[in-house]
Length: 223
Ligand code: APR
Ligand code: ZN
Image 1: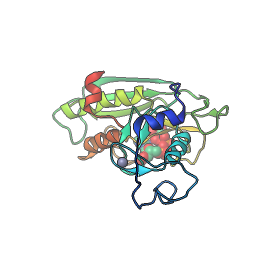
Image 2 (image 1 turned 60 degrees about the horizontal axis):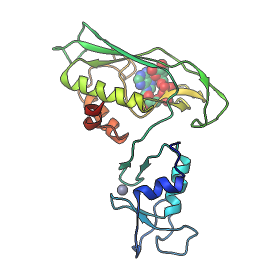
Image 3 (image 1 turned 90 degrees about the horizontal axis):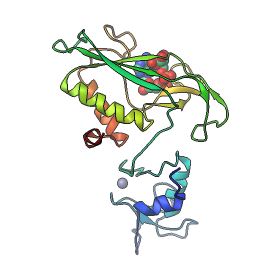
């Protein structure tokens, strides 16, 4: 919470429109101009329109970090943050090459998150969460592009976007620390899980996933 009410956050990023188009709000599926119980509509700088109260409801369903994401085009207004629990991210260079990256060394990232109690930003506040498989080791080629990905991952970590608390799709366990929407390679010399090398598209995929979280090269420059 940044101290602003949900209404204030939504207003900050919206412009009111005088005559709404004859379209439905894609959040509630009711006409933008119709007699719905929702006040509005408002339009974001991206041009997509919704009922004001629908955006407020959407914001309230998220982790209320002061940012707003257009549900249509995914444009992020403000800085998106996640609900990753407290922990540590470290990295170092290892003097070996990854399959598919024979011309450079590698970077190993080590994530460590201990189990704990869920906060108000988690699915079941007050309930414990588990943390399986930590420390989790991940690998990147120590190339120019790999280094860029690393810089952006450091930003993602600070914004609590690498992990979240929820149900693991691998184990089915709930109330546990899980990877968020940014893929990591957790195997070094093998590829038994599908999360190993070689994978020629990996770095570009990760850059795309980071972009979807609102993290681009501009962010890394500012750190
Ligand atoms: N390595 C890297 N990414 C993985 C792995 C893995 N071994 N298993 C799943 N993922 C990816 C999935 O492709 C998905 O995109 O993480 C995302 C979330 O999957 P979940 O199964 O919900 O995540 P989680 O329970 O955190 O991961 C399961 O990953 O690193 C290992 O020790 C961890 O064995 C655990 C496994
Ligand atoms: Zn939009």
